Image 1 (cartoon, rainbow, N blue to C red):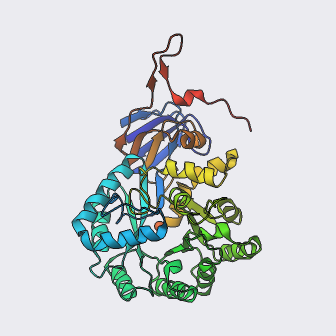
Image 2: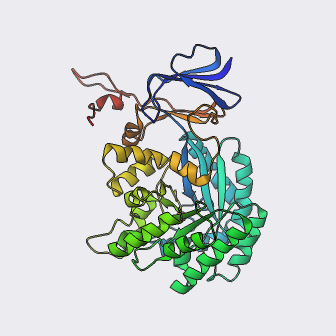
Image 3: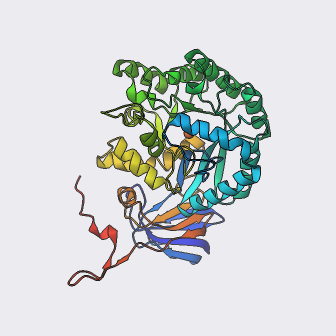
Length: 430
Ligand code: FE2
């Protein structure tokens, strides 16, 4: 007797007509025609069953604060940072917990199973850290939350940043963050990368650094990040987030840089929704897109993922906790339009970020945790195209969220009465 049996599923790797049986929170069997009894049964009707969406880059201490205390008028990263600086002193731990929990509800309903959130440690009271450690505990049954100690005001630029970063790690924050492009000088930026990597090495932690989130082609802190990673033997444990200056760098320099990054086995996170909005703000026309070189980094052998970064906060006014929105935007901005590239974009919000976070038992495979999402789509490309409805979200073999299918009623003479958007896809070739 199984706890859950999903019948007739399609899987992201192209297998069809598959049954998935779960017991004790674990996937016990994946094969066609499982006939055993189960307490709960779902007929997938040929639709896609995916492992959960993973958001590897978010700011949960700021989310859902849009308009408090005011809106970002210029739309720039720097006004966003200034605005966040106005909100920090007036918000309470309870405010942050309340907003973060509401965001986690949304995330669970769209099939997000894990989030890596940066948490600002440039606050002597460490309100964000206190709040998000509590949120991590509260949401653990349905969401894996990883926290990055993020010195938003600059490790060296802010007098108490390092002390507070170390305190937050002592309190249980998981990962070392940074923001070298916000230090006062390029030299200080490089020094901050060195110091932060040394802290991570000493404590045996991972690193995830906001790096070169600017349109300045000479913002080259990712070079230092790759160098320090190799020098300290941190290969495979370090992530460069945003990396938008790479969009604007000289091609010859990038040909050297990418090899150094690959040698350091850096992971890379692009945040397409926020960076297509923030970058190029000082350009007239043509306006730069500002997304890092996603396909080139991937093709050099690096693990590349997409993150959501911001939802309704000082930097970004929109968003709905939906990693298919993120994949859809990343696909467009990166011109990732071949069928193989579109399928890869689905991996960039599922398996690739799971690797970055080091999630154990992730995947729709026998022996993995029974965390899954049933989508109203036949395959990953259709899931991105339609930003497909999450029909069911499964956690530990139990259904934790359900959404009614998108089926539209029509009242047009001589036309169908019911429209399923997925029925309008021509058969793709090749
Ligand atoms: Fe960020």
